[in-house]
Image 1 (cartoon, one colour):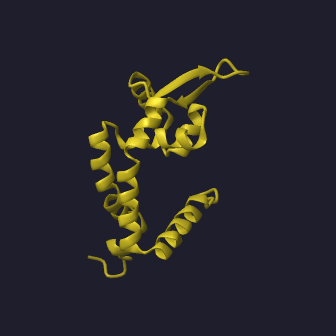
Image 2 (cartoon, one colour):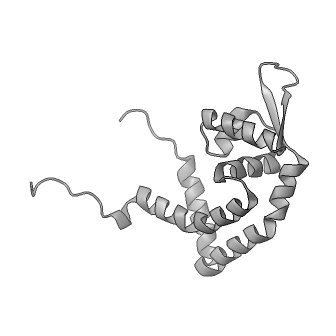
Length: 151
């Protein structure tokens, strides 16, 4: 092995790996809740975005729920078949669609609100409110970074 070659960062100091590990720690219990509710993580994110933001076009839903548009198309079809979202033509641009959450979709969120809040309380209690707030602030700041053009 070439001793002059740079060594990769240890995995516990690798941001991508640390983010994945943290995601799994947080999402494990949430996945169990969603499985019992009969929805996927992606479907849940779409419902949460629509519940929070109101009627949106698919591009904005994809962006806000961290999904690729082709994946969102399938997710919306599934949610529409379950009666959790509704589609309508855009009022001024007939080429576009507007997607909204239905009462069935809202009820799913409400039915799982207590368990979701319990999971959030566990995380807050274990991690601490101040650290959790700081982590969320840092992650949102990281998300807002613009990468310069080039390699």
